[in-house]
View 1 (spheres, helix red, strand yellow):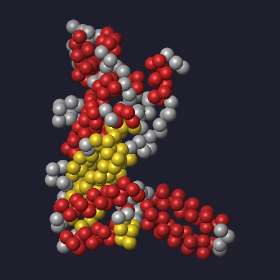
View 2 (view 1 turned 30 degrees about the horizontal axis):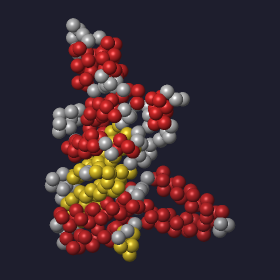
View 3 (view 1 turned 90 degrees about the vertical axis):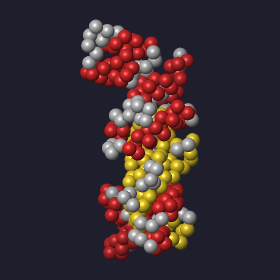
View 4 (view 1 turned 90 degrees about the horizontal axis):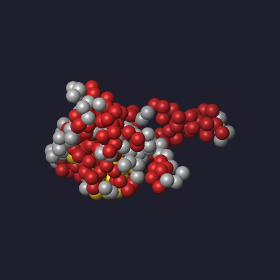
Length: 310
């Protein structure tokens, strides 16, 4: 029997899309013959994953987790093709497991894919096996972790689909002294605000220069078309840019629970009550499927192929 090397397992995994351990077992069962192993995997339903990989996965779940000490939070987005799959308990459990991994990993989403869950399974192998079992393309699309040295990280899950999973998740990091429970509470309220308003940046300094330039271009064109002299038009543009920043910058936005107060003023008020400096350090907002180009005919085509229709 041929030696089952790591390179051989890797080759079969890339060709089949099946999990690492499944590929190793297939090679052991078939004397190291890759083609025979491919057939073996197909009979077991484990080679379905590769056929699904080019189909759009814009549904699924966002999962979030906060550490026991409340100072670290993680969000992940785990995608599938249909909303139906997001209600599957196995899929939801996997999403929660991946959030647990994200909480402990310092690295990008690729590092998480290669890490092991608490059950000892490699994350990407878990995804691949779910694809084979459920029959839809899936991917762990993105992940993020926020940490504070002192203070609290708050999590808000909007439109919850189950325990710890939802269609939108927001993390808010509150750095500072005082009562951590108070900071957690304020952070949760700000996270709910972020879910509703979708700010582009924490502060004006953090706005993408390209986005600012585009907005300035639009406002300049609008002002010039009004027939105003250039010097007046330029003043109009500056005023409109400031107004726009108040709409898209988190610290400048009116707090949805108290529109007479900005988020910046809410943070300052919290610091005063705490008797110690408090800063809104960062926020992250994951809305399910944002930025994914979804092909409406993907699932319909699969159904048609299954029923013999074209």
